[in-house]
Image 1 (cartoon, one colour):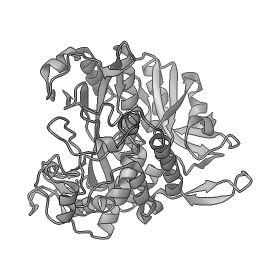
Image 2 (cartoon, one colour):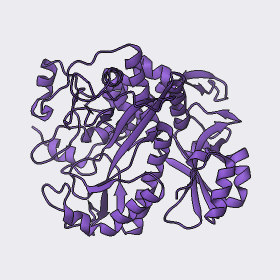
Image 3 (tube, rainbow, N blue to C red):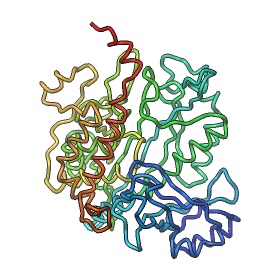
Length: 465
């Protein structure tokens, strides 16, 4: 029986019942990196009352310099979990604070603000994820390769032999997911060589984001125990399918526990309510700037390319929706749920979920119309053909997505303002939009990679024409 904590008293009981000796106390920074300190369980009262300190500048991108006061991690009891593979260890996630106040740069705080906004409207935002990953290794020359050298079928999706060869890994992972109470209902070999996916049920958005962070940590750890490396990188191989992090979203009535996206009498035949269509319309309306938050790296846009016979991608290239059609950005494959196939797991799930909710609520508030579902195989259309049909195309690069994000006032309001230093570097200089801070990080990231001359460029252009 999985014990779910709601208070510090519950945490104490779980510690005692499971002989917990140590706790990883964790928080995430803006790029999605998880940071933790190992805290003896004997210090649990101080951990939850006073938090634990981190040098924010050293921890990553969270709006701090080396002169800034400490980040204080304040754990959330609801995120407290017994680590399945390590007896005596637990894990807890929390929000970052500075000098006792909520820190506006904290991705978890940003999502919490959007969740509270929805709750003020009587709505619960619930979301599930499908996180694809690859099991890889390096060969004798240091080249990245698929860990299972026999996993080389041209179409390996659902391959029973590939699952069998990794049976110990996938069953251990499935067992741990079930022990965590996430109701694992399937593990499968995905479309890429060496690619797998473990499906879990949906939950409240904040809970699901915490689950996603722990899931990534768990998959990587279990893979290492089996002598492999697990990667969620969007596109680790040019000639192999990329890794996605699909969101499946719905809004629920807080009082009646009713799925407000479900409508069995939907005239379009997708089982989606008018509220659901407006939510979807909001995401499509903000799709270009939204991409910067859910496909947040240079590598992300090497995944977001239409497939060919040689390389399948299973990703969207245009801002469309449809039924059970995997070439659409938004897919309605079952009643009352919207799947977004754009995201990958190279950033913070808290920021991605917050962006989805903000865009969807904007669609509802503005009563946006979405039009009829698209039924075409969109991989058969060139970008020019898509535009001629009036279908918007997703950004081709991170820098393009950031350009649209900077112009999006809905995201500016949703993500709020953050404090800045004065001209002399002293605290209290003023405020700026979080979006501007995030945009600078991503512009720097783009140029750090794009401005480097590669061996491929030298081979192609050294004596060209």
